[in-house]
Length: 173
Image (cartoon, rainbow, N blue to C red; front, side, top):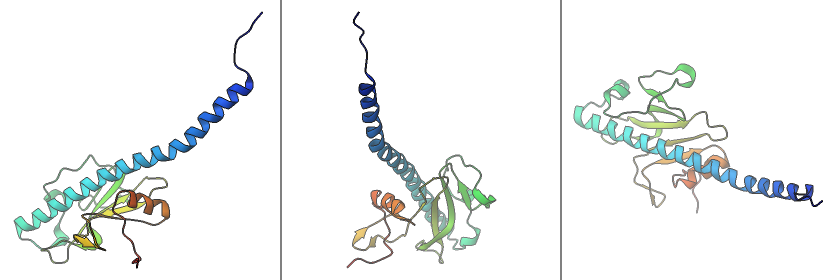
C-alpha cells in the first residue's frame, strides 16, 4: 500500500519558511499602517491651521486665549475621550491622535499676537509616540517644510524621517 503525504521534516520546513517571511514582512506592514495614520494626522493639522489662520484674518481677533474648535470652520473626525479628561474646547482626540489648539511651542501663527499652532500628539500608539505640527516657517535647514515631526527615540525619529518631516534638534555640519 502506497501512502502519500508530507513528512515531518517537510512540514517543519514550510512552517520555518512562513515564519521567516512573516518576521520580515510584519514590521514593514506595521510601519506602513503607522505612516497612513500619520498622514491622516498631517491632513487634519493642515486643515486646523488653515482654519485658524482664516479665523484670525476674518475676525481680526488676535486673542489666542479665546480660540476654540467651535469657532473654526473645520470639520473634525469623530472624537473620542481624551486622556486625562482635557477640555474639549481646545483639545480634540481621535482614535490615534490628540489635537491641541495654541500648543505648538515652536510655531507662531503669522499675523497673530504670539498664537501657537495646533499640535498633534500620537496617543494609544504602542511603540509609536511622536508629535506633528506646522512651524509656519517655509525654509528650515535648507529644505522647505510645511509640517514638522519629532519623536523621542530612534523608532519615532525614523517614522518622522520616513514622512519627510523630521525635526533635527542638532544641526549637522
